[in-house]
Amino acid sequence: MAMSQAAYAAEQVIGHQGDEVTAQDISNYEKTGDKSAMMKALVWQGKNTVEIVDAARPKIIEDRDVILRVTGSTVCGSDLHLLHGSVVQLAKGDILGHEFCGIVDEIGPAVKGIKKGARYVASFQIACGDCFFCRQKLSSQCEKCNSNTQAKAMYGTQTAGMFGYSHFTGGFAGGQAEYVRVPIGDVNLLEIPEDVPDEKALYLSDVLSTSYNAVKDTAVYEGDSVAVFGAGPIGQMAGVFALEDGAKRVIFVDTEP
Image (cartoon, rainbow, N blue to C red; front, side, top):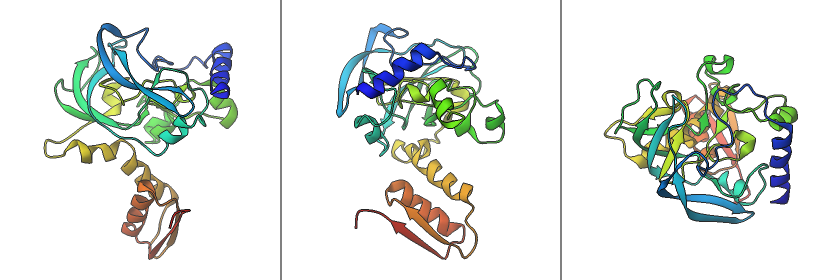
């Protein structure tokens, strides 16, 4: 916890890059939300400690914001990294969760194509939709939604913003809450068909898209033998997609039998 908070304190002193198109470090809604309308939210309180608390509900603060009433959320395996304090720049009170879906409750004045009352699944990443990487359909590398200076110094670039995944990825409040603010909502939400339940739609938030793109980005060819390291849900889905792309066999490598 001390290292995580020290890294965040250093980022605050250094300052962000300043090229972001959406507000950074709104990891809860204590300063920007509506304290007259509270909600339940799961927050990080320190290493190996999370807690459900009463928190201020989010409000529209930017023209392309969407407020989603969460109807479904899941716990990702990578959330364990947050729980164990191995991801830097977490702060006490950060709202967790990057896989969620729900019903649109409020819409900012510049949002296009999003319908109030309709069901949507959120992308775990937050992208602008307009930068070089977004135009190449490489939105996980969006240049405009995560302005973290330390991330760029360490890796030469930074990822897109991410919901509920520390200030290292922009400091955005997550979806393990009753309500969530979705920045640039007309880019980062996908409408759910009426006949698709939340339990299936949630796969599109992270697990399915991550495994699918892992296979596509590594280019599996007809007759390939494919090794997948880690046989969790994403690994198993990657194996299925590899077979669909013509792999003759898939070998799973894992520490569990």
